[in-house]
Length: 198
Image 1 (tube, one colour):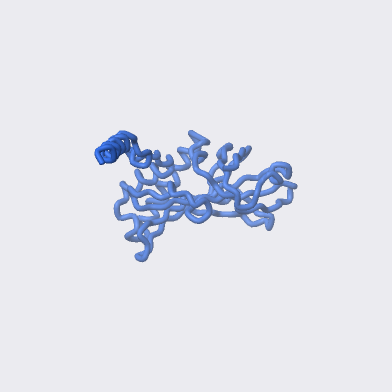
Image 2 (cartoon, rainbow, N blue to C red; image 1 turned 90 degrees about the horizontal axis):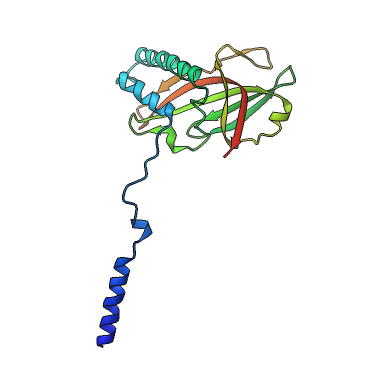
């Protein structure tokens, strides 16, 4: 009986000395937010009544437009850290292909696109014109990281195969039924893109 009690106490001591890897996380690992989320959070803090009416929303949108254009002009890689989904390809008249990559809650399922700080989700699209060889390497609905040369917002700079100019405006929206607001950063035109499948 003494042996059983001693063995039980010894086992208990040994188990208490062994660290449980599941409980060994002293601090929750923090993931740095995307630079675009940090920018949106900073701007939203300047517009505390962002979703109150269209006037405030339009002021915010214009401010965001200017800030993003400045950031992307200074640093082509500003959005490169955010995964995008290859969503569409159109053949243009010049034997080139117009590509659309989307980033958002439904296209990439990326939790880091949501800011708890400002209760805001972001989304955007990137457009690029490429040759047939490049276009043939892409997979529909695959997730990529993308880099390239920023050419500006797509608004009025992109001609569709139909001959119509294309616009992809930024916007901000929050309905009373939603917990989070949505900020669309807009559509961006890139050249000389490189992609890496995730």
